Image (cartoon, rainbow, N blue to C red; front, side):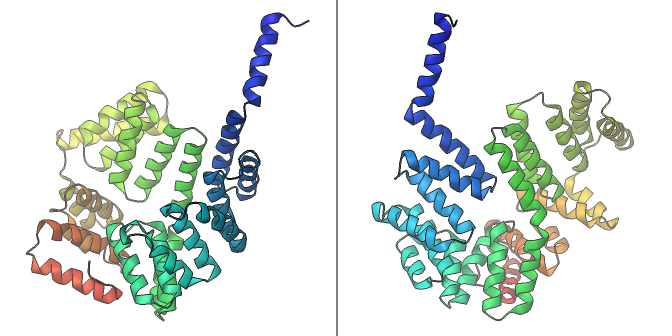
Length: 377
């Protein structure tokens, strides 16, 4: 027989489970996780379960429409969003959601009309460009995406969009170039997706480390360092974060600081062969360099001279992101492939902001934009 305290506890648990607000929240959490993990069938079913409890739940309706859009069920997505739009015609997010669906339906004029309700600065530029290009305004669309990629040449949606635009305006080689770049970056998108999945599952620290790792592997050391700093701030004694910070600092030529972090990691996990090997390597470097911190640009030039352009590019980019006055010339010099055009423009624009009278920089920007057939920033 159950005792009274046990019965009371069971009753409390049952009551909490029967609370509609709590049930709604639990269902919403599950649905969000399914969507973040791109488990679209499960997400659709989960959002429908939320809507069983609250049929006009705004987030659930918009998220359901997102799932339908992502699975190319554009007509169904439109039906969902039209109802939300009627209820909230001034909600910018809803306006853009519906405009994106109109693009999927090929109803370009309607998409443009919706987006023109919003200030230009508030429009999602990939959606705006798709609507413009679909309506035949390919040069305007290229200018919109060009501006996005000059600001952030690592934007993952921009290159795909630019490839579509170039195809539509008859520039087959350019379309192939940007399409191939988008395909080559697929592993990075998948790595970021895994990090987001960890976040959605309630594992922020592994998510930070996963994101830091793929950024470092991709040669994007500055944002990778930012992720590591956040990880160490949240969990100062995390040996994985300590070891990864040590590896980065070793790559940057900061041997004394690299040793500090690697030693902490090894002390926390003795016998870790990789970390111990790196610790020995950094101690040897300290002895060879007499504890000097090698300047980043000096190291970058040495790497380039030795033929290690991958590391030279990563070092130059790291420095340029921290100081726009010093390294952009090296970014322009070493990121010299056609697919690097927007990285070069990004670096040149940073110089232009601090050296407004530098005519050589202005001319370089003009030449790059002319080759890309986009408006100068």
